[in-house]
Amino acid sequence: MIGEFGAIEWEALKLSLAVASRSVLVSLPFATLVAWLLTRRRFVGRTVLDAFVHLPLVLPPVVVGYLLLVLFGTRGPVGGWLHRQFDIQLVFSTAGAALATAVMSFPLMVRSIRISLESVDRRLEEAARTLGAGPLDRFFSVTLPLMLPGILAGAVTAFAAGLGEFGAVITFVSNIPGETRTLPLALYTAIQSPGGDALAARLALTSFALGLTGLLMSEWLARRLRRYLGQ
Amino acid sequence: MLDVSVSRRQPGFALDASFRVDGPGVVALFGRSGCGKTTLVNVIAGLLPPDSGSVRLGGETLDDVSAGFHLPPERRRIGYVFQDARLFPHRDVEGNLRYGLERAPQQAGAIAFDEVVALLGLAPLLGRRPGQLSGGERQRVAIGRALLAQPRLLLLDEPLASLDATRRDDVLPYLERLHEHYAIPMVYVSHQFDEVMRLATHLVLMDAGRVTASGTLAEVSLHPALRSIVGPEAVGAVLEGEVVGRDEEAGFARLRVGAGTLRILSDEPIGRRLRVQLLARDLILALEEPTGISVRNALPATVVTIAADDRHADLVHLDIGGPRVIARVTQAATRQLGLRSGLPVSVLVKSVSIRGQRHS
Image (cartoon, rainbow over all chains, first blue to last red; front, side, top):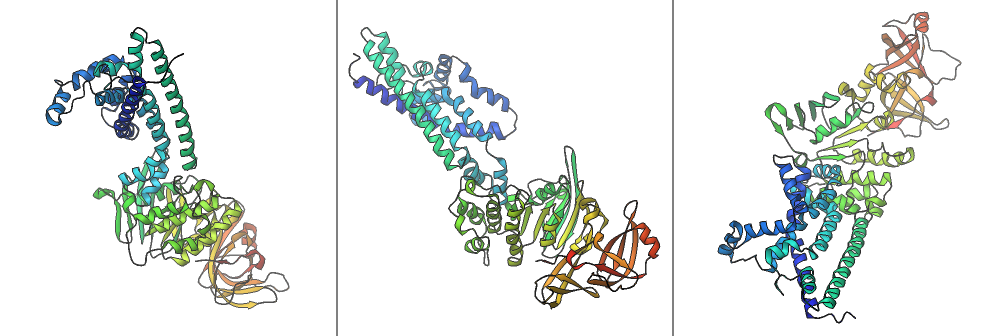
């Protein structure tokens, strides 16, 4: 009825997984840092940083893609420098798709990490202090392990959302087969092409299965982690 | 050894406390809940910086506000056993115990892992998670964890407060052994006088953020400030003495205190040093040693001072040949006996009302 799972589907699926995982890996340390700053530090410009981080939630994704294009295009201030210094080109590349995805899912990740950081019992950090642990030591030996469930939840949510990022990606890196054509872009292309109904259905089902697996896995992992933390 | 003189203002509370203790020992910080004991301990630990004043330990300055100096807690090497244990939930018992050990300087004569495990009876718990421990077990692990960080001073903030009476009696012997075994000075926060009696060598009384008295346990037990904490019924001198004889048939030990001896019901052997508290309300004063009564103890004494305790009772301070005791008598009795300072009297006390307490 809807035919066989073919090369186009595989390519889109692999690309989506690659883009989403790269975006999560890149943004995870930054999101942790920003979450820590916003939760634990009082500094001038904290509110501005907070608002800035949440911008992708309220801006149309096309605007985010456009801003990325302006900044990271080969003639943009950051993109031009990357191109000259390291011969890195983000526009029209998988790396660019990962960047756009990372920016879009950044607020989700920060939010989830922040919640987990707020729930870390600071009295345990005090205990670590009296046992001789300095600030960094404390963070890595007490705070971070206790935040793991939240970080994991944030990563999974960001990954799942990243699989479906459309607007910012197509604006920033266009729709190039094998390079930037992820599942939603392939699905969009299939819908636009005459006779692409079956392909579109297969791609939609793939997305559906992927999302469901992700949610179930995150639930299972969170339960295991909570047991590990004795909660 | 420990010299603290600090003040700190917090919303709704002001700490303004000074005390000084020389030589290693167990300092009990004693006072009612909310009097600032925990705040003071947090200042000593370095977790709360003082607004003014200084903290010195064994000749080293830990805080000196006038010089702008504050040594962070992680560099103080002061062990802290919190009221709520605060074990790391993501580490098992062994991981918790090793946390401080791994971060402590390597030194000769260090407190060893196996030794602490044996001393605190932790061997069967090593693989467990904090969530699988009882309250008493958690506190024992917390004590071991603090010890293994090789502290120069050990702070214990009501480590038994969250435990019921049975669990408290499970943990207390470990605390006693701790002081006998290691010569680490300790600050022990408590609002239970029986814990103080068992553990402390020095007593610091606190009330509303201030130190109202400090000194050896025997000295401070005579101080009027103690009454406002424990109430009139629990006032009484703490005496230390040595068992000099036994009457096996009757189960008595004869304890020499000052110029006299006390018979107390005790199995302790000759030579053992014991601590007893003679509650002021249990003491009877007689002008001459009576005969034909069941009271087994009559200590020769001289009246030192008499002060009104409340509307109808006096507190009479008595010298029993060095140490002092307090008796609570009615003002009518003071008048009838003609009590005045310098008067020789006999202090009578029932043997069964005295409990000998081994102490470290």
